[in-house]
Length: 357
Ligand SMILES: Nc1ncnc2c1ncn2[C@@H]1O[C@H](COP(=O)(O)OP(=O)(O)O)[C@@H](O)[C@H]1O
Ligand code: SF4
Ligand SMILES: [Mg+2]
Image 1 (cartoon, rainbow, N blue to C red):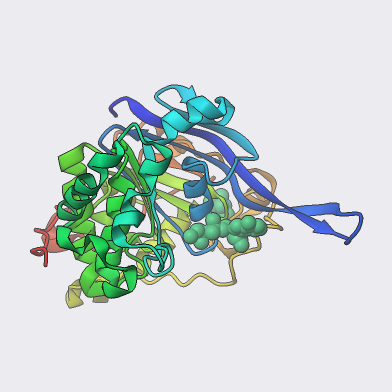
Image 2 (image 1 turned 180 degrees about the vertical axis):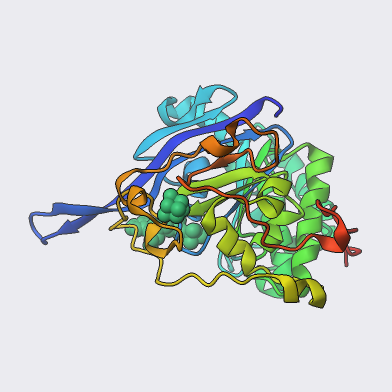
């Protein structure tokens, strides 16, 4: 892998659970993020997937400093953001921007599109002097495929897909190197999702961006991600290249998630095994001992209760040279092909993107 632009190590966010009104006493913690590690290479897209509530947004917010970690480190080009002075942090933060999930609520309805996109310049006037801002914002509108003449309109005058383009333009305003996109297409109609994903791909090439692309659905991140990390209850349980994760998953949770991904080809669909998980996701305030997936895992054994599986290459694959050799936090990791190979090829390529509307 190319040199990491971002290194996340043992990242933790615990929200205290308190009792009492006058004398608040901590009685526990919601372990929203509970030890997350990953690297992001320059120019790379890392997909992060997992069910709702597994801690994805909390990771995203810590990356852009909207939440302070309880523990762990986030290093940008070797400098730890969690210990930086506020002044140094402000300069670095410019390079890491976020695109939010819901374009309907994340844009201030009382501000014009021009003010929304140009707002980051109030905090970083060095990027665009006042007299230059209107032109910069119009350039940004053009870059995301919107008419620069719309600069004085309000968010309600746009469709969902157009609003997400506005959110993306705002994310680009400070010319960042990294964009953290938290479920950027989840709130959009399926027909519009591909257009926004295509736009993000085009912008990545144009501006050499690195992406952390968060989704709850494995099928959305597949075509945009170079690598994919699968989260469960505050931790990454498996991480690898997209071919490793989709075609050679070794963690039972990833296998279960993949077995629920829609398969367009009816014949392939017939041969696909559905893994139905029993039970609910445990509360992050009450995480199971040992392997946190054990209460829903069909392979769980006594060792899974006693010993926390680490995110590393499982011993069985360490000496092999197969695509199954990638990090997976399972004591009994086994390869299982869940999604049938497309058209007989083992590693399906990226289909041509539909034309942008
Ligand atoms: N400010 C908060 N206080 C307490 N718990 C929180 C807070 N923010 C998130 N949580 C909890 O942390 C867990 C992870 O939330 P989140 O990161 O939003 O998950 P995701 O984005 O994967 O759906 C959830 O159980 C959520 O209820
Ligand atoms: S460690 Fe045990 S419980 Fe956890 S995923 Fe592996 S087999 Fe299942
Ligand atoms: Mg979320």
